[in-house]
Image (cartoon, rainbow, N blue to C red; front, side, top):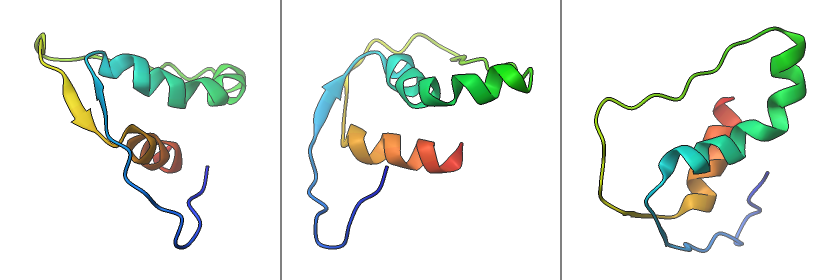
Length: 67
């Protein structure tokens, strides 16, 4: 996942299930995760009943690069 110079445009979306968005980023890494016997847990402290408006493409790109 890359953003090329001068191609960045904010695309806001609204999501209620943040865990689902995080799982989309983790899925491509499943073979490496399984081969190294790594356990991944997505937890949240409290129920968050609100929708979040964010540029999820950028958010996913940041998570992808962290992983």
